[in-house]
Image 1 (cartoon, rainbow, N blue to C red):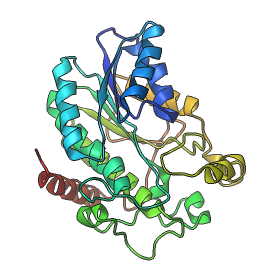
Image 2: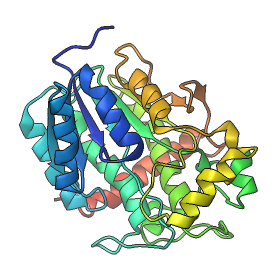
Image 3: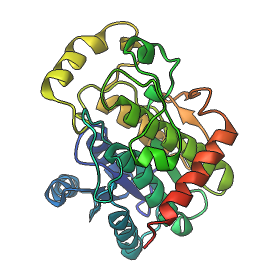
Length: 302
């Protein structure tokens, strides 16, 4: 299907890695609304897009801050464009625990609570058939070979409130920060699947972009990135999931721009339908996380 000049796509985290590549390659398909923390970096991406003949707006938003998310949603709505698709891409993977201004775990707030709240704020303004795509991660599945090899334990969810405090089921991963990351990604995955059942007028899906060692998720130190990119990710079983931002962007754009795509589908890094962990595939768990997330965020609604 040919792109329409009336199509508008929101991309969070568009200034580096998969988000940047997706934004640049998505620009020929319509107008972009670039959402990120750093205004100067956002302006730089917008300038790249406009020099290539595209059109983009920038909206500053710290996804870990619920007040910032609500302001960003209002700003996006005020632009007045009909939103064709929303890509919830932004995320962090920290090697040391961090807190947001409200004292919430920074990883959980950025990767789950923020994208969830932004989507919830935008849903009433999305037309029927709009695409909403969440970037998840296979590390939520404790049975995945790569997760086992690395000594990780997948999502360690207790409750949304406990996750916001930085508390996870024990025993946890031996890698600092991975319980927070895996749990946040599990929660955003199951929320996407629950929302797809609740909102059948929209196309709500998730994608696992594979192992992209060069994306530079915030917090990973240089030595860790080098070792993982140059050594670990090239070995079995990791090489099975190894990917690049360019290839990940192609899969994401194919899903996001498909006006007849299904809903409630979890795609792998090659764009094929896949399944998450046993827990993530359970509708009861999906609905529980959805309800607990809404209840928790309602306490900070502005």
